[in-house]
Amino acid sequence: MEEDGNDGPPPSLLAKWRNDISRAFHCFLDRSAPHTVNRWLGTLAAAAIYVLRVYYVRGFYVISYGLGIYILNLLIGFMSPKVDPEVDVLDGASFPTRDSQEFRPFIRRLPEFMFWYAITKAFCVAFAMTFLSLFDVPVFWPILFFYWFFLFFLTMKRQITHMIKYRYVPFSFGKKRYAGKSSAEGQHPKFSTSPTISNAIFESFAESFVDTRSFREIFSIMDPFMSCEL
Image (tube, rainbow, N blue to C red; front, side, top):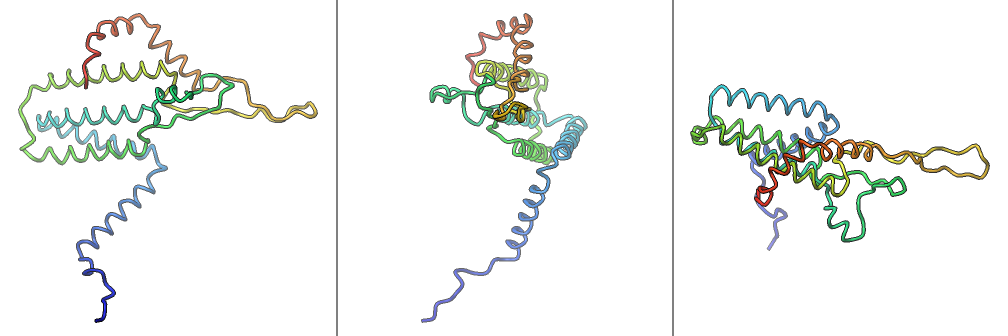
């Protein structure tokens, strides 16, 4: 018996169109990766359209609440390091806090491009859901707003406390620089002994959030709620 060379039936026209559209979409994403400002301007435009839509119909507050919780979860991933510092401390490693230590840039658990893509897709999906009356659940929206703000405060407090404890900021602005060859004979290039920009930013960040009396008072008020799980 002769064996057929084809393993299965040829792909349908619909599958071919779907593959072409998927390939073109991924090509567009790859080309838009270097254009950070333009991408976020497009996301702001999508967010403004969604806000105007909700304000015009005066409804779909449950969708807006779910969208806010989802964005908060993405923000935590964007501000968190890829490797947990607690695990690094147990392994004998940690973030560099002195000039003599090796520069280690901050690597996010959720990269900026994925963070942008997830937020943009969330706004588009939420906007499409506002055209379905099934999701227009009647609810008193101020309760949802204050509850979301309460969760935002607790989450940010936990994240800031984690940042201060392990001395890192979610941005990498500078790295070690070479001072060049010295005029003296026989000397080699050295690392500059000036502090890195990230450490300077951390010091100002810690002073503004820890040494402020009002912020400490807010923390003391919210401490009984810190045992709550989100």
